[in-house]
Length: 321
Ligand SMILES: Nc1nc2c(ncn2[C@@H]2O[C@H](COP(=O)(O)OP(=O)(O)OP(=O)(O)O)[C@@H](O)[C@H]2O)c(=O)[nH]1
Ligand SMILES: [Mg+2]
Image 1 (cartoon, rainbow, N blue to C red):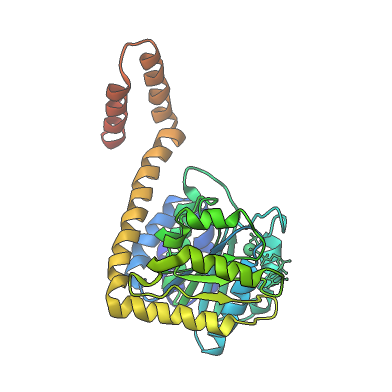
Image 2: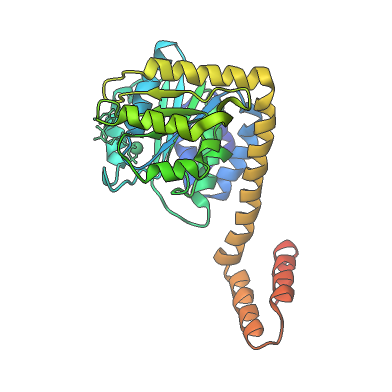
């Protein structure tokens, strides 16, 4: 069956959810139709505020996202959500869990939620995430939230996607502070301490404050630390206010453009890199050449650089081997 991407994109731009879901499925399977569709819908993107919510497995990201959606809906804004790799050992295959945690919005036409399982195929997940964000953007969502597991643990690099990043931590995760010191600071625009109903939230607050140190406002943004209880919604109003203030800061400082350039540079690199890799590993002809060259390198008939040059040339200008 042939897929009429023109028609799907047309429907999407009219706000058709089924067309959106269909396009997302194509994007997840990295089909050429999905890429054709993205080419068409791309001029209609760029107006959403893209928010990343990231943190360790089981830290309450989905529960928090549910409350953030509610806050934006109360403001009359529409929301799209992509939950990437929701497979934590805590909640065990949380695809279902996500659905339950955010299920109250399943009949709200102003909300679109998509959960993606991890597939780990040569950067495919990162790639599909870009596409799904574009699809939600073209669908007309004002706010797009991308939920991913914490920095360094995920295949999807949230800085390549989100404009505002909320970094979640919870009380009593001792090893977590190491991650914080190791540069996670540069990732978070807003620090949320979830499960503030548990012991140790104040200590976590102090630790974060210390880790943030003097650099905290060096770029003109204060990097707020906000205690929340996702299960009850406490602190979420303040958190959403901070998210909106960060967006205003990005716009007024001109950083939004600067950051966009950095993000799209990284996205383009991913797409180019993985287009090559996919061709190399998926196309049987290229694969054959690859294996032949590996042999030749082993037998010292050629060297790795010459072999690499031949592969690159073959991918650009295929010829019979
Ligand atoms: N005590 C307490 N528990 C919470 C809070 N927020 C979330 N939880 C619980 O933490 C567990 C994990 O919540 P999720 O929202 O699924 O966490 P997650 O970070 O999305 O999990 P993964 O996507 O699987 O990594 C659930 O049992 C929640 O009910 C909170 O503020 N306080
Ligand atoms: Mg989750």
